[in-house]
Every structure is written in structure tokens, then in C-alpha cells.
Length: 273
Image 1 (cartoon, helix red, strand yellow):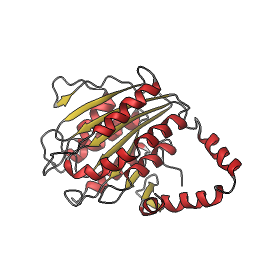
Image 2: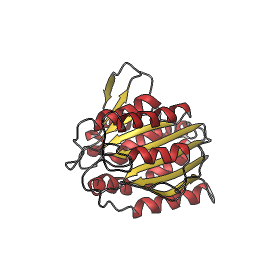
Image 3: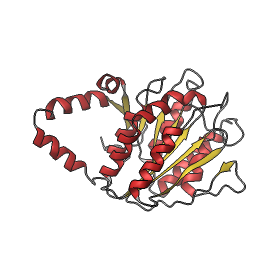
């Protein structure tokens, strides 16, 4: 795990102008481990300090489940329990959680709520993550922008290329969307139009900002379509506009779970640097 963390670089972005600095999350964590391990009381204090630090928290995963993301999804599956327990911890048990997947259409897998109880909803989402299967999606952009629109505006399926209604409301002190993809936003037509789809993505991010929703984006530069020019810029912009974090993981998808953990542990908000 330590070696995997050391390979993960999380880019924590500054506010405009578009300047960012690199922080090696693995190195920081390794230093903390080396410092705290001999002092069990200090380690316990660190855990206690984390408890409830984000106050009430709403979190929605928006995941590209096309075939090229299989490595990222697998990485997330391996750590799903840890990630959900971390959400429970930083929110002090006061959280809602949802999960939406997308290809060229949108699927609401779990609406944003804590029903019937937060603990039971954690288990529901854990099982959904465990059952995710990356498939299809050959060529072309994906409907990441429309998936974000579904979550931010709470859209029903009627009249859209969407399965399931998103009825949940962001009501918590901390509101986070975690977006994971390797491709351009293309609406429902599997096409990226310069000056149109990039603008639509920026408009969605602006709508999130006005609702105090932080979009943290995880870019997976896969060997399939993930090296398409402009993907990384658009993913960075989601974080820049809303105040969230941007993470670039390995092209294999390794490091995705650690990036999510960093996002949750920082309450979805990039530090002021």
C-alpha cells in the first residue's frame, strides 16, 4: 500500500490565475506514519481530530463505467469499505451518499440519501461499488457532463437518456461530487464539439459552485482514450471553478481509491496555499 501511495500524485490547485502546485500525497502520508507510529496516544489524537471535522456531509460518486476504467473501478472496489468508513468518520456519522454511473447515458444507481439509516445506506453503496462492471463505451466522449447535470439539478429520467430519477437534495454543510473519467464530456450524442461541450461542462461546474457543491475530479489517463487532448484541462477546470481537488492517477487506475480518500479526508476542498 505504501508503494502505491508513493506513486500517487495529487495536484492541489490554487485559485485563479491558473496556477497549481504539486503535493506528493504518498510522501506526506509516509512522513506522518513514521512520526506517529511510535506514539499511540498521538495517533489516537489524530483519529479523534478527524472525527466530524467536515460536519454533515453529502457525497455523490459520478463514475465512468466504460471498459477503459476497469482498473480504476477495481481499485475502488478493493478499498470501498475504507472509503465509506472514512466518510462516516469525517462527517461524525451525519452523511448522505449517492452513486451515479455513465457511458453515453446516465444511470442513477443510488439516490442521495441516508435511507433507511446511514449505516445501512453505506452497505447498500458498498455492494453497488462491489458489483460495478466496466464495459462497452468504445470510442468517443462520454456523458460525464450530463451525469453531473443529473446530480446537481436533481433530474428525473423522463425525457433524458437516463435510468432512474435523482431526487436527493444537497443539504449538508459539506457537499461533494467525486467525478472519475478518462474522456471528454460529450452529452448524450457521443461527440465532443469544441466551443459547445466544453462550455457546457463549465456551465455545469458554475451551477455547482453557486450551490456550494465541490466537484473533485479524478483523471485516469488510460492507454485507450485517456490521452485525448483537453481531457485533463477540463477535469482541472471542474476543480478550479468549484473549489474542489483534482487528482491524476496512474493509467492503470491504481491510486484511484487513495485519491478518493484524500478528497474525503480534506472535506472535498483544496487547501488554501
